[in-house]
Length: 400
Image (cartoon, rainbow, N blue to C red; front, top):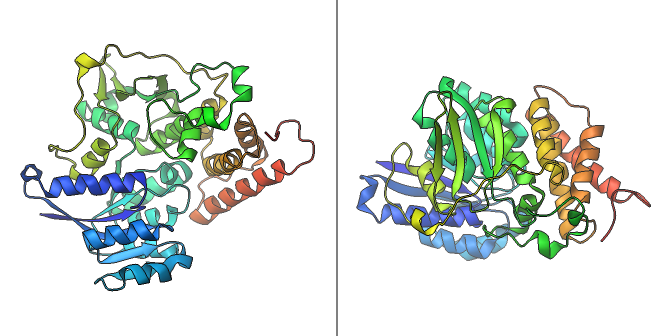
C-alpha cells in the first residue's frame, strides 16, 4: 500500500518534522507494508531549503507561492524530473491532483485557505497542522468535508490528543473536552506586570521551540483562544462543553470527560512528531521517532485555571466561537496584524489584545459566509489594525 502525500509548507517546522517522520516510517518494517510517497512540496520563499528537499525526496511537483522566487527555484532544481509551480494558486493545483491522497497543510495565516477548501471539495484526507483553516472557515470547511466524503485529521498536539481520547467512547457519551495550555512565558504575571512586558520576555517560552508569531500568541494565550474555536468546529462541540486548563509541564496534551465521570487523557513528550505520525498512519499506530514518556521522571503534573483577567484573549476566543460567522476571521487577522506590529517594536504587548477588541467591536458580523466574505473580513481587520496604530495620541495603542 502506498500513501501519496502533498506537504504545503514543507520548509517550516511542521513540514520538516513530517519529512523526518516519513523517512522513519519508510525505513521501518513496522509500517505494516505501507509506503509513504511525497508527491508535492511547497514553500513560500525558502528556495534553498525547498530545493534541498526536492533533490532528496524527488516529488513530481514543487511549488513556490511567492512567484518572485520561481526563477531561482528553476535554477536550483531545473534538472530534476519535477514540474515547478509558482504563485498562490499553485497550492490549489497541487491539492486537486488525483495522485494525492493526503494533504498535510502547515501554512501560517490565511494564505493556504483556498487550497484547504479545494482539497476538501476533492474529498482528500486533510492533515491540518495550522489553526487558521478551522478558525477562519470552520463552518464552511467542515460542511465541505462532509459533503465530499473527506476527512480532517488534526496535527495540532491538543486537537490530536482530543481526537485520540474521543475514541474511548461515542460522541453522545462526552460531557466536555479540556484543552491544556502550558500557560506560555508570562503565566505567573498579574494584570499590572503584563503592562510592561518586553519582546524578549514574550519570546522566552519555557517549553516549546516555536517561531516568533506563535510564541507571542502563547504569551497572550491567543493560541488557546484560537484552539477553542478550532475545537468547536472540528469536533462539532458546543462552546459550553469546552474548557481550558493551564498545565505547565505540557505532558497531558488534552483530555476528554465522559458522562460517567471518566476522564481520558493523551500524554506524551512535547514532540510534534507524534501527532504528525498519528495523522499519517491513522487509524493504525506504529513505532516511530517520537521520544517515549517516562512518568517516573516527571515528578508531578500540575493543573490550574487560566487567569482570564490577565489573559483577556482567551475570553474573547469563547465569545467569538459563540458568535460564529465572520467574527473568527476578524479575530485571527487582527491578531496577526497586531503581533506583526509588536514584533516590529511599534506597539506595546498589551496593545495586541486592545487592537483585536477594537476590531471585533466595530465589525458587522456576516453569518454563513462564503470564502470571499471571509477573506474580505480578514483584509478589513488588517486594515483596521494599521489604521488604529496610525491614530495620533491614541490612548490605548502606545508605541514602545
